[in-house]
Length: 74
Image 1 (cartoon, rainbow, N blue to C red):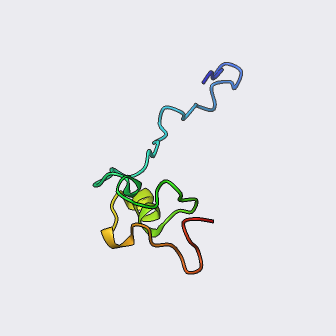
Image 2 (image 1 turned 135 degrees about the vertical axis):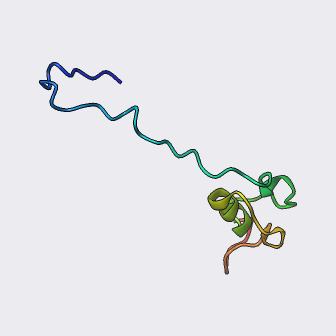
């Protein structure tokens, strides 16, 4: 990113280099879709996938379990 400090009279500084970039959690397990029998027909995110995206870990009992009223084949 280009920043012209002379045009800004040197009063403002660019803070691009000081920004922290969050790349997500460090995953403890591989994605739950690799072992899920419904992965080929799945169109909705299951509870295990959502937890894995947020925390990098999931409970094996939640693989293929969806919210009430949803199924993998919509």
